[in-house]
Amino acid sequence: MSVIFSDKGKSLIVARDRCKGCELCIEVCPVDVLEPSDQLNSRGVITPAIKREGKCTLCTLCENMCPDLAIYIMPDAG
Amino acid sequence: MKQQELEHPHIKEMVSYELMGKYYNPFCPGCGYGIIANTVNNALLERGDLLSYPLITGVGCCCYMPFILVGNSFYCLHGRALPFATGLKLANPKLKPIVWSGDGDCLSIGMGHFMHTARRNVDMVMLLLNNEVYGMTGGQMAPTTSSGVTTTTTPFGMRESSFDAVKLAIDAGATYVARWTIAQPFQIAKSFRKALDHRGFSMIEFISICPTYRGRLNELPSPVDMLRQLKADTVSLKDAANMDEDQLEGKHVVGEFLERHDRPELSTLYEKLWSERGGRG
Ligand SMILES: Cc1ncc(C[n+]2csc(CCOP(=O)(O)OP(=O)(O)O)c2C)c(N)n1
Ligand code: SF4
Ligand SMILES: [Mg+2]
Image (cartoon, rainbow over the protein chains, first blue to last red):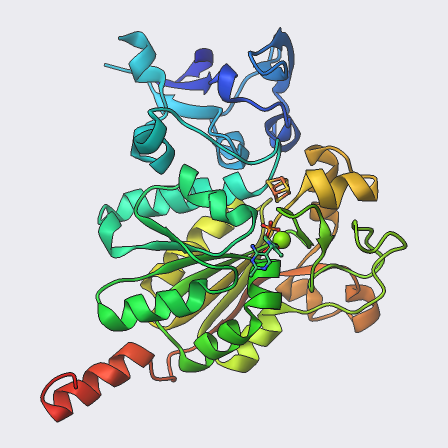
């Protein structure tokens, strides 16, 4: 699990080993901030990453469209 | 410590976590079933009282659903999820069964049960997962396969006409009927919450994607291709009113089709009968 973006007390998290590489999150993002990363996970699939200058609006559409709970938004601790 | 905080809060509630100590999602990459499961989990955990919502599945890829769902589940014979749920409801009218059924499961082998459960208006939520093929057994044609679609048993394209589950449910007497595609997670969530509060037989049909069989054999090999095609083929109920039959060929009309409160519900009828007779029996 790694945080790929943080803003307004919330973080966008990718659980890399759960990702099956379907790229639905990249397709549905309304502001187009996700892209395929250069990393393979333990299943051997390409996982999503945030674009270099991308600004995620934390709209939760990718979270709702991920069949594998591999990308989601959580409030930061504390 | 840090690892713990980052984990998704639903993982520990799931059946797969209880059985194997880890999250296990058995579906193919990009299968739409996971999207529906996550939406239903959100709604059920919001209610809290998981024991009131037994999950009943028929046979098909959807019988793997309980792995990624929260709550208690029962895995029925092929097509027999609805009669099992009717029995549960009559034995304990406080329960609200949630039935998961594939298009082959519900509309071919289980068609009789589907019609009669809708006719009797049994209080339950039926979720019909329509991926247009028999996914589990290798992508054979289903009664919902659209015309022209290639499957393993229709190599030259589907020639027969297909069923419209929404029309069937309305005619048979269901009291809440809706259809959504998996590209509409927010509408699915709203509609499912409404169905949970509705008293009577609710049927929600989900147009799902099966990249492995429906997609691969029809030049849509990736989940993203299938999602684009699905979005292009979706028509809202409002737009469909101005379109004729030829324009609607091969399209998925989505929306809330029906909500009525004028039909008696089965368990209420029997409860009344028992109280008139002074007990069951
Ligand atoms: C009585 C019986 N007949 C046939 C089968 C074989 N069978 C298993 S799943 C299935 C089709 C399921 O298709 P569908 O309901 O569309 O589910 P999907 O896999 O597409 O989710 C069939 C015919 C069976 N398990 N039991
Ligand atoms: S065969 Fe199709 S319906 Fe079954 S899990 Fe794979 S993608 Fe999903
Ligand atoms: Mg099917």
